[in-house]
Image (cartoon, rainbow, N blue to C red; front, side, top):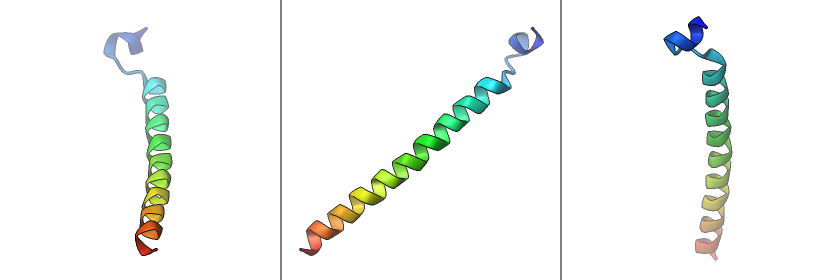
Length: 44
């Protein structure tokens, strides 16, 4: 109950951070693939 009163919900923060890092990882991979495709299209 003390966690609810202070707003200190560590489990929710950890879950949100895990989601954020996962989205950053996949976003970086997709951006690198898109950049490689653009470079290949321009080179040809």
